[in-house]
Each structure stands twice: as structure tokens, then as C-alpha cells.
Length: 236
Image (cartoon, rainbow, N blue to C red; front, side, top):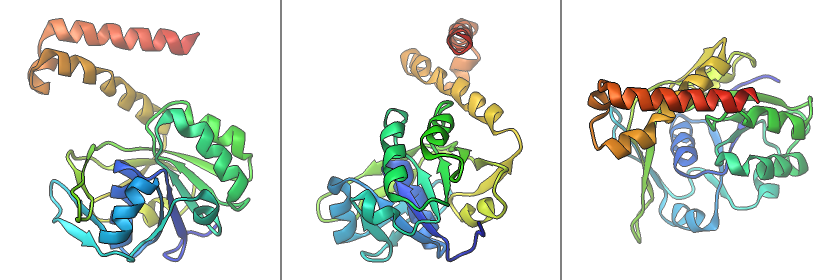
């Protein structure tokens, strides 16, 4: 499938990460549709969507500047690329919606940072639909106020890594504020992200800045035990 600026991109399950990515893609002129819940669709439709970041200015997409849908049947019709951003526990449900409503030939990008999402999506969508893994390295903070556009602020840095499988896909998704690059070993990238995430709870419990916590051998030993347990579970 050819990737070009006219390719229709659907952000499936647009929450904080999905709305940020969709907003950045729309600002760069990509053809974007957000599939989101009514509670978020209503303020976006009425007031637009705002994105900001560490090194990017605060930018507003006016109401109507990008398509918004609350039903998969409407969002997926004619889609060329579907970027899945739901929580991992909802991957199966989203896969079934894609299988039911999306075209037979399209590219599905799993931007979920989990290890099991791509196999589950591929199993339920069949081999005609190309499923591509991606790793999102940054956090996005969502804020909402009555009568204003919801704001999605990128709070950390990093470049999105995507599997080197579909020619032109990374270039299409690579936009200011959400840079994307291909990686030849995306499984290793996803494992690395998982191991880093295992430290999140420990960091919160320690009450220390991340650098100080990681430099403390006692917390380092706890993190090592977390990693070992995760590997043991995966090996079973």
C-alpha cells in the first residue's frame, strides 16, 4: 500500500496520547480522524483541541479542523492507516471493531508500548492487514476546563520508534512535535521500554528524583528483582 499525504489516518481510542499524536499530525497537514469517547468528543467538537510540549509552542486546532467520530463504523470506513492507542486491556475489543468495520487492506500501528498487542491484533485481523509495532517514549498530560479546548501537553522528550516494515510509513507519521524513526529491532525497543516502566512504582514509592533513585543501590536492587520477575513470567 502506498503511503502519501492523502492517506487517511484514524487514531483509534484517542485519549491523551492519541489526541496529542492526532493533533500534531493534523497540524502538519495529515488527513486525521479521531475515534474517541463522547465525553471527550463533545468538547473537542465544540472548542477544538490544543497541543503543547517541552520545546513546541502551544497550538490550537480550531473546531472542525480535524474529523471526530464516536462510532467505529464511521471512523474506520475508508481508512488507510489505523493507529491504535487504547490501553492494552482493550486491545482485543479494538481489534474486533477494526475487523468488523475497516477495509481489508490497511496498515494498523500499535502505539501501545506493550509486548502482546501486536500478536493479538495480527491474530484477530488476519494476514491481509499489516500490523506494525511502535514505541511511544513520552508522557502526555491532559487538562480540561469547561468552555475551553482540551489541552494535551507532552511532558517528556523522545522520538517515536516504529518497526521497519512498511515503506513510507515512518515518513508519513514523522511530524514536528511527534518525530518518528524506524527501528530494525522493535521488540528490543519494546522490552527496553517495559523495563524502564517497571521502575515507575518504585520511583513513586521512593519519593526521590529519578536520577537519585537510580543511583541508590537499594532501589536498584528492587528494580533488578522486578525485572527478573517479569522475565520469569514471560518465560512460562
